[in-house]
View 1: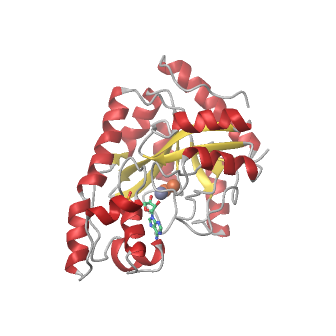
View 2: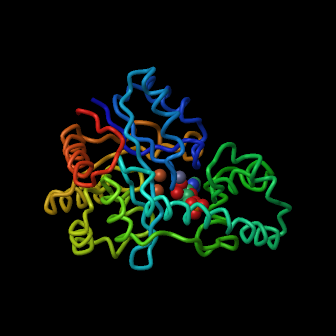
Length: 292
Ligand code: AMP
Ligand code: ZN
Ligand code: FE
Ligand code: FE
């Protein structure tokens, strides 16, 4: 059984519609795929209809932009009720924050001598629920300023670069509680990616588990072999579920092909068990948890 628990469609910053993404997943031989667009559940219905057609098990998820001890942390929420008022309000705040920083980002790019405006971003953003830095990057590619998203981030859009503008992110502990309250389970995405997340050490992860954290994404392209083994050991010691996933973004991210990392079926089974318990405890109408 091949299980990939973290992917993006064009509803956030991937490049394929939910339908095309689901069909692609079935074609490459995935049995289970979680769709985890950034800060929105808007892609779920279309993806579920496509999954029913190709006999793929779809896990409905959202990758939520959070902050913890001053650092950006991405939190994967699986099976939450997206109509939970508090949860929905936070997601709206994050999406609004992403859209509303766009004028400032473009102003700074113009300050760098680049002739770009909002229409250039809209043109490449397709059906995205909010336009983020990856869409600005795509616009810069379309304008011939850079060759790909990576170069756009490296030169202009990453923190510390001239066009970087901060935005709203949810408090991580509050978000873990909201997801639990909404009947879902939470897993930290690529906890040790890019810069060392000093706050997400053993003590930090232990305290987050006490708040309801279910797992950590261990096998991810941003973790080297040594990082994966260390994190897997911590997950085992703390009884956290260890997941693996591609973080596929279509052509938007290289070296993140569907199924390049997968989740062990036993770990997936534990996640489903926790999701079932969370759904019952919440008393909410949550997405159906598959049998296994
Ligand atoms: P935003 O949500 O607008 O702040 O953009 C953040 C998103 O940009 C992340 O979730 C990634 O999907 C993407 N991203 C960050 N760094 C890079 C990079 N170097 N190359 C391509 N995409 C990136
Ligand atoms: Zn993304
Ligand atoms: Fe992420
Ligand atoms: Fe992601």
